[in-house]
Figure 1 (tube, rainbow, N blue to C red):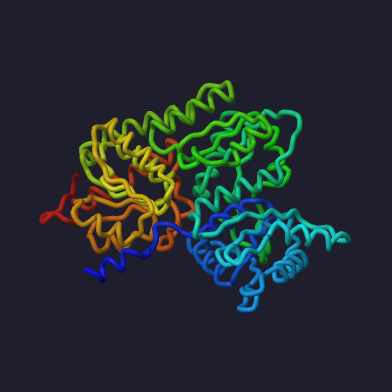
Figure 2 (spheres, rainbow, N blue to C red):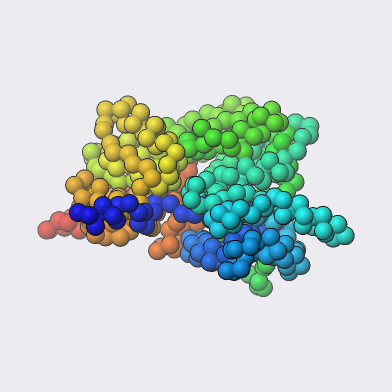
Length: 451
């Protein structure tokens, strides 16, 4: 028992990733940008490994490369030298500097060091440099992601004549999701800026020669124009209690902000499309009405397979909330909903959703995968839904895992999984129904040719 208590005092295989990783994804979604981590080489190597395995694309992340001496006396000179090297070798349009646990712990003042860099480089044409504080001990990769978006917007957004343009902050979604959002906005006739946009930089075609910085991404000019957009849409239930890029634009530039959960499932997608109807002054295009109709029909077709099935949902707060809401729609009970974040969001939001369906569920935050494994022992779950880090639990428990979100490092095509809208919901619904059917077939002593 003492050994067990001692183990519980430490996190084992956390249900989250590090904050600079989230910031690096944001910077990879900006045109001509290069992520730069102020810390040890190991931090950039760890992050590159996760991003390459998920997106299956080359990922360069610079580092100030702390040594033992730097750790004691500070990394100022390493940062200055590193920025000079990056400017010379990559010629980026923008450099995104993210701090790490080490540089934050020793107290390096990154904004001050950057001011000194500009003062000493008056004769040179320098890129835009944006810094963001991302110590992992005070947040998750999602905190790093959203803080990086806020830092970029607060540093670049500018005033100007109002544009009939919508800004979208989608959060950490897939490259396919970003392409889908572009398609939807185009069908509504809405000019738009999506930040970040890594739909090409982290999901492109083959190269004839190596590109130091991949083509694509949101341009600096587009980011500046967010300050005079006619509206902002920001996805994420976890953002409602904190300052975000959207609240910054609303406060400092009087840009109306519309907050919404991730549009997964009919209910949340309906809200998103109604918002677009209001913003555009147009009715929903027929292709989306038909997609919704087909989705409703599939709910009816699959209901006999899914009613009262039990699921374990884990991952980032926003996707856990959206997926849990969707599961209730289709008759599945998300008996355990878990995240590694500690904001209180899922404990506030999910019980309210469950009560509307007269269901009781277990909601856990700040949890690691060993704790998730223990909590699944007596749940009799029919499937798990989340990222690849939970695979070993599914294997040990003998239940299937439906992979969504980030990271997915044991399958190909993670960047092409569509989660959002009627189309993404349709794909997820079909995967869930077929997973349940397959499990039933495999467990049967006689098998089924028809289900």
